Length: 202
Ligand code: ITT
Image 1 (cartoon, protein in one colour):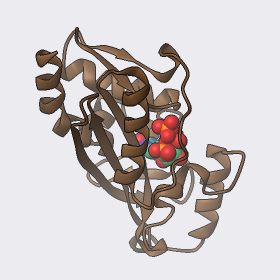
Image 2 (cartoon, helix red, strand yellow):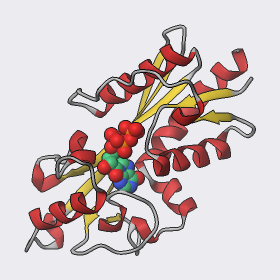
Image 3 (cartoon, protein in one colour):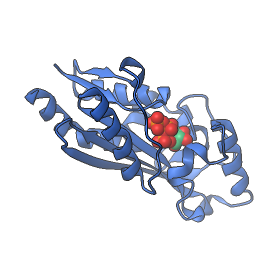
């Protein structure tokens, strides 16, 4: 059975992960957290994307007994010394709100020219198997923070980000093009061989 859990509560992130995986492993059966029995989800308290991805993947693999992928990701702005980083989802406090996060980030970069707006999206993808085997891959997408939001697609900080080599914001990129260049696409494609091997062995 080519069945796998993706341990995320973010529906737009799940859609991207599903789309990328389906292109790489045809016929794979992807379950989101809404498709499995509820379990206690531990808080994401680590200081690294890798650490938080492992927290999410270990908990879901233990609860479901199924091979599990988890993604921890965020935006790291050079002049902010890598912040928001692992705090990206809650950058402007609770309750979590993407629009408010974006406004805060823009305000923090007021008056800074393009040369001071370099940033990157980072993604750690953890693959955890019920027997305890664990693999992590990292993906990075470099670019800049725009002076104002552009586009309606994607999610989170996408309207504020233009990737190096692109003419439009992440929120204006066709889905397939975002997947090709994104932090998530890169990390996931690197972990696919291990996932495919593990699923064949089950
Ligand atoms: P799960 O933990 O349930 O997976 P989450 O949305 O809380 O969902 P993270 O903790 O990994 O996920 O936080 C990711 C943050 O980084 C969140 O604010 C996203 O909006 C942002 N982010 C990550 N990847 C992104 C992308 O491709 N485009 C735009 N924003 C992204």
